[in-house]
Image: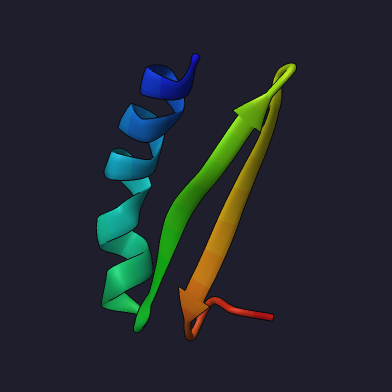
Length: 43
């Protein structure tokens, strides 16, 4: 599951970075995905 989430994030990361942000996978527990938004995406 974690690998699938990482792959999905790799696909959307360029769009986030183009806007001055980024996303980081924190954890996947029992089907719940936790991410950390960075830069312009935070908040």
